[in-house]
Amino acid sequence: MIEPIVAALYVETNGAYYGLPGVDPWDEVRDARRYDGPHPVVAHPPCQRWGRFWHGSTRKPHQFRLGADGGCFASALTAVRNFGGVLEHPAASRAWSFFGLREPAIGAGWVPADNFGGWTCYVEQGHYGHVANKPTWLYARGVDLPDLIWTKGEQRLHPRAVELHGYAKARRIGMVAMIGGKDKAKIRAATPQPFRDVLLGIARTAALRSSTAPQPELPSILS
Image 1 (cartoon, rainbow, N blue to C red):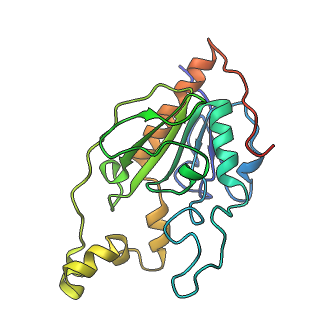
Image 2 (cartoon, rainbow, N blue to C red; image 1 turned 30 degrees about the vertical axis):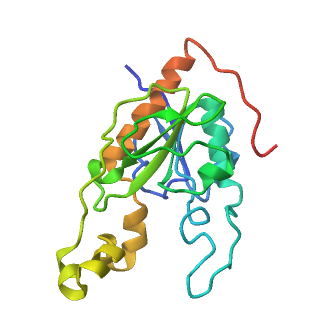
């Protein structure tokens, strides 16, 4: 059986979504904001302007506006709503409240997210191969919703960090700060392969659904 094609939006060039059968990757150069179907999507819109430090460095705050991501999140959300699939963002992303999405709770599983048939959940990528717990929120629409590992992972502290800095600072700086050298940010942002496969599996159910019951197109958030 030939697996349905999935468009992987806002992914790293030559990263985890490249070289896979049935996956159409859209990196920064290709510009996923231009995606207009027809395949279901896995979307990883940039999160810098939606997280704890959306405004910029603590040493130079208020460099940026909240949500000033060039329309990436809005475009990704529109793609999921129109073509089916799943969107991934860090837990506590301010994009949820900005776009009127219900915020999921730890351990609650999938809960209704909006009035467009979307669902959202809290899951940790540490259960699926990431070196850190990496709490994550998902938004999905037009797909089968699988059972995931809903529990909160155990605290992960790098032993060398505890040795050098003590418990409090080791807890604050996290696992990734002690590995990767100049690649810390890349390691932190990377999607582990088992979690990638979970997301692709979710998105592919949208294609199977649409083959028997096409969903009406929804208006773009950007229009």
